[in-house]
Image 1 (spheres, rainbow, N blue to C red):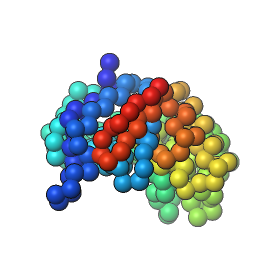
Image 2 (image 1 turned 90 degrees about the vertical axis):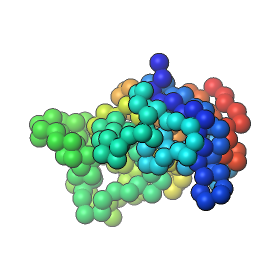
Image 3 (image 1 turned 90 degrees about the horizontal axis):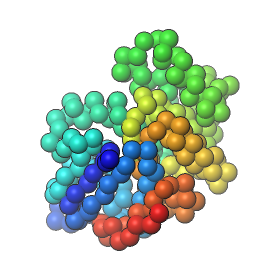
Length: 222
């Protein structure tokens, strides 16, 4: 069974092809690392897989639906409900506490308050920040902010988690903690993970490593 399927995908900016003739499948619950040098198209591919951008050639299907043919409102709904994202620079809302950042996607989805509070409580404990729930982002370390970002991305129980260099802005100890959380929480939640990284340590938590170069996949290893 395939959760995410890319076939013959190409993307260009002006006359330059950033991705070309790319095929990729991701199964439910599978963790996949996209590894390769800067500028090889990893983040562009991640944006296509998450419906943030559209391919110029080929198709990207999520749960059988063609993301390239989906209306903007449908893409927005999919991203709210079924696709979570973790960024290198956290992207927390600075005027919200850690807890409020995790609550936000559930509020947008209209969750009832008792279920919302139970879900957020469980996630804050899972990322080891139950005692820091009232902290503002400015009061938190980079590692703590990224752990909040992981909790927020998983709040709606998405089928797919996309992570763009999630440890790239962290020291080694904080990065290791975030990787442990990504592996453990996606396993527990049953979410697939596609992670862009330069790090062999980050790639090691994945079931499969996809090597990219010059906009193409050049190899795959378990």
